[in-house]
Length: 510
Image (tube, rainbow, N blue to C red; front, side, top):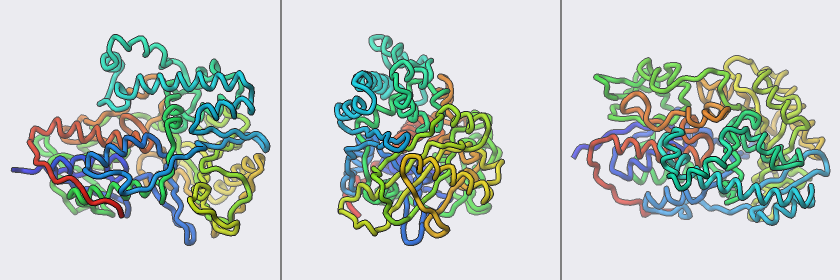
C-alpha cells in the first residue's frame, strides 16, 4: 500500500499538531524547520546562564491539548507538568491602583467591588455570562470549524440557536460594547486588552473577541519549563509516530507539475519529494513568492496596513525585584486610545505604553531566596514596521526609557544593563518571520468581516494546506493548534487514499 508523503513546512504549534495527527493516520510525514528548534513563535532567549520564554506565555483550553495527546495514544500529563493559576493576572494603573482577576469568578467580582464599586462587581458577573454565551455560540460553529462564512455560521448553529447570534455583537466594536457594560474606564481598559491577544485594537475589533475573557476564566495554566516544553513534548510524540524532523531548512521553492505538488526545495538545492504540503508559516510569505512563484496566488493577499501588532520585548535575567509581581502582570497606560493611534496611525510604538510582564518564577513550586535570579519577559505593543524602520540603538533606548517610566509610575523599578537583558524589535521579528514586518498575529482583526477573511485550511493551490496563526481560526497557542487539526482533517478528506494505521504511542514522559 502506498503511503502519501507529506511535508510540513514549519514546526510551530500548528505544524507540530498537523504532523502528529497525520502520522497517527499512517502518512509519511517530514517536517522542515528554518530555525534550530521547534515552536515557531514559542521561543526561548538566552540571557547569561538563564533561558527565558520570550514568546506566548498564556496557555488556555487545556482540554484541547489533552485530546491531541490522547488521539496520539498517550496523555498530556505523561509529557508536561501543568498547574492551574489561581490568580489569572494582576493589573496596575498607577501606584496603589491594583486589581487581580482570579480563577474563581466570584472572588474576581469581590475584588472588582472593592477596587471600583459593588455595581461594577455585579456588571462583571453579567459580563462573564455574556462572554460564556459568545464562546458557546462560536466554539463548534466557528472556532473549530473549517473556514466559516456568515451563512455557514448560521447553518452550523441551527435555527434553534440562530437567535443567539444576534446577542454576540458581531457588528459592534469591543470598546463600544465595553462602554455599555462597565462604567469604570479602567475596567474597559482591562477587558479591552483582549483584542491585543489577536494583535488588534479594541477600538476597531468586533465585540466577539470578549470570548477570550471566558476562555481565560476556564483556566490559565503554568507549564513547568515554559510553553516551549509543550512544543518539545509534541515533537517527541510526533517522532515516536514516525515523523522525521530536519532543522536549518529554509524552504525556497514549491514545485508543481500538472497541477500537483511534487517537491519542495530547501537552502537553494536540497529537494524533498512529496504529494502534499502543510504550510505552517505566515501567509504573507506565500503572497510575496518567498516559496516560489507558483504559490503567490495560493492565498488572498492583504495590504501592509492590515497587519496585526508587532512587539518590542526585553528578555531579562536580574536579581529578584522587591515588588509583588504575579505570574502575569499588566501595567496600563494613561491614554489607551492614544496608544493604538500611535501604533496603527502614526507607525511608532506608544510614548506611554501599556506594559506586560511575565514573571514565571513567581509561580515556582519551591520557595526561592531573595538573592536568586529572576526571569522576566517585558513586552510592549509596537507597529509591524520591521521591514521599513531601522531600530537604531538610539530608538531602542528611547522606547526602553518610556517602558521603564510606565513601570515606575506603578511602583516597579527594574535595573537594566548590557549583560542582563536581550531586546527583540519588529525588525528582528521580521527576520525570524519574513514578509510580516514583524506582525505576530497575521492579519489584524479589524472590522466584523476580518475573522471571515483569514484563509482556511485548504489553499487555492491543490495539495497545499495551511496552518498557523495567520489562518483560521487565528493567533494564539490553542488557535494555532486547532489550525493544525483543521489542516490535517482537510488533507485527509481530500486525500482519496486509504492509509494504514500506525501503532499508538504508548511511551510517555521525558
